[in-house]
Length: 453
Image (tube, rainbow, N blue to C red; front, side, top):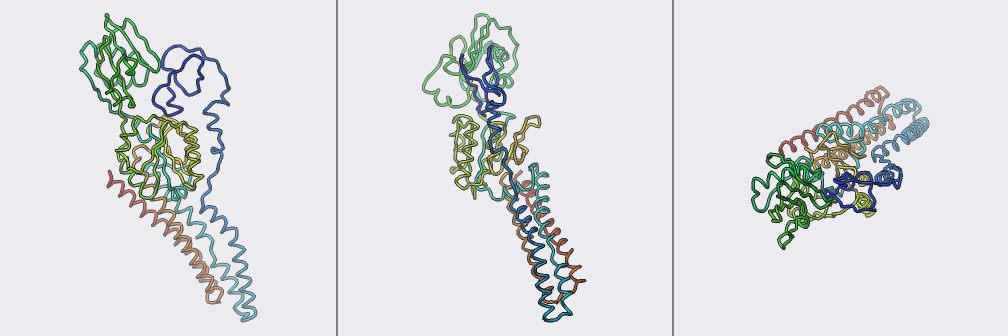
């Protein structure tokens, strides 16, 4: 069972001499293995050692603020000295007031405070709505996204439950007892899941039990036999089988007579169709899965027609897929749930991990999203755009303040005392503006979420 590594839900059959990779789980039988490589050369270690895990993400506004701050002092001193020299030639009595007024009224604080205050408030709102970002600069990255890539298993589907249906002949009481006893003896995930949902009958001590990895299990009791597994394993095949062969199925035969099959249908998260429709308004949406194409047809009916699907993707395939999108100029959000998505999550411009169980390890990512808020991803992206707009408006207000204040100061119309009063007011006004604006956007987000619920 390599689901921990690859995301593929179906177990893989291995023969003598085949290579086994760290992260897999033995389902049956006894193994004698030889270690070929140290842990440092393992598949997962090589994936985590990829260059993408050492890259740094710097916010645009952070670098812009740093750039302005470096040049602000030089620019203001230049304006002050030039203005002073001018007034020394025109009206020396105003020269000193002009010099001091220019130095006092010019305020880089408003520019420096705009981004951190806005992003900090948005970060707090996200946390309140159960999206936990690693750092504030991720919000800027979110605002520029134009492509969203989803993993399927554990991301679009929930790990908490699945819908299991039975198609076939009704099992007798004795057959149900034998089926329960057989499933109970198996450690296969499908066996455990099926055993958990069946009515518990009297457990029998089996006369014989055998499990063939990747195929199925068989048992006998009082000369009655049962086989549970693939349709080939139970010895049955007809043209109707093709209707369910690409789905996860468990077939049953009793005493060499085919009885039917249990069909495992993944339970998709609530609101998935609405989320994809919302995202498709201005973004490309892609499903990138390690599973087979068994549920492609269902997904094509569930999700918008422009959604793209890619199946049988290994972890390095996912990483390379994201890299290819970025090379074509795309800004990519990757949404996954496990270690098999680690490379793709780190390679992407923004990576979210869906958290459904607090005891499950989450790979390196930019944000952890509570599974209950999955349908709100589109709303989070919209709020990040609004946050960036607020920062831009705050920059404009700060720029207008500095230009206006400097104009009056250079012309000699602003006394130093008035300049000293105006200087802190500019910073206060920016803080008040960003706080009120982000609070309004956060309230709007909560109202939208409550409306959808």
